[in-house]
Length: 347
Ligand code: ASP
Image 1 (spheres, rainbow, N blue to C red):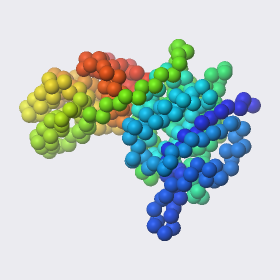
Image 2: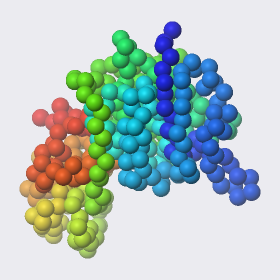
Image 3: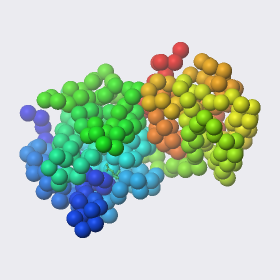
Image 4: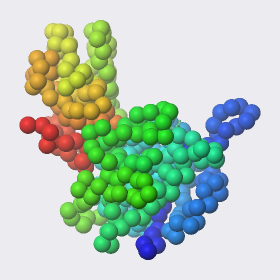
């Protein structure tokens, strides 16, 4: 029998806590006590549950870096009082928030599990009940007196993923998230089967430190065949731009027309950090494979390896917020700070 744990549930909003308004046909948010009423099983879990609720609850499309800071502060303020945290969040931008928090919560030693649902918790076929109950169980799980998953994660359907490896993959399926480049940290069926070798365990026991300065002067440009020169021009000339993520083809390739390479090189010369992230769901950037990648490399683009776009943008916001200079940011983009990239695949 597991010992009783104390878990803080932070309800930010999202479909999980919404109800269909019969008059408007739109999903309206309801409060956490209504969620508790819909899931009486929560009382049977045997853990001490407390909740903080955002007022008003937010559709996750409206969640921004200020909310990430709010979440980091809530976790920090409550860190010593709870064994684990469950964050209820809309699915649309959950992977961004989870990625951001993985960087902002330095030396995290306790579970922070994000979950939500595709169908509101009050609906008969809801996926929200299982997602919520299992997330609490995962946040409470311990082994040899230590939390089993001391990481920022997303739990959805039957998989627990590292938050900064996760992407929303389906607007329809209960299985809404995927982690294409890193194995699940747990799979759930009759049992919760943890994938221990893939879970990160901190080497040192250090107090949690939160980083709450995030720089937003970043752009993402998804390239496409036929993209006009003036599109790239407009983006690299954004006033105050500090970093640009280019979503490239395949293993990190982009057109090697003179104007394209030249404008990227110019941007790099101006001090804009250009990060090359692949448009493919799985696999990694290797700018040495094709001439179209080599040219980007020569122009000064830095490899994103197998990073998700969500993790790339939040990592840049975090690194720039730490006040690192150009070369330090580049150096850290080439390092895995909290398991967001695999360097082992790269020879
Ligand atoms: N629009 C909702 C949100 O992200 C969708 C969901 O929760 O699944 O807040």
